[in-house]
Length: 86
Image 1 (cartoon, one colour):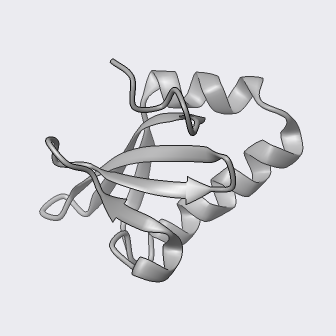
Image 2: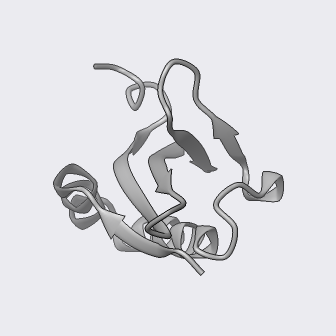
């Protein structure tokens, strides 16, 4: 099972979103700990960077996986339209 770590930005976003939405996003992220690459989790590999995207309704979670350390690092959480900007 993978351990989950959150970036400062992702924690900040979780704290400022509505409680019910934050609860749903966290539960989906926790399911990633079992298999961060499972297709039935609405997961896709992102192009251009070594990261993945988890879809949770209209929200997206961008994360990286360190297989050696058995860690999932949640980089960003945000609405669908703006999550990929930067």
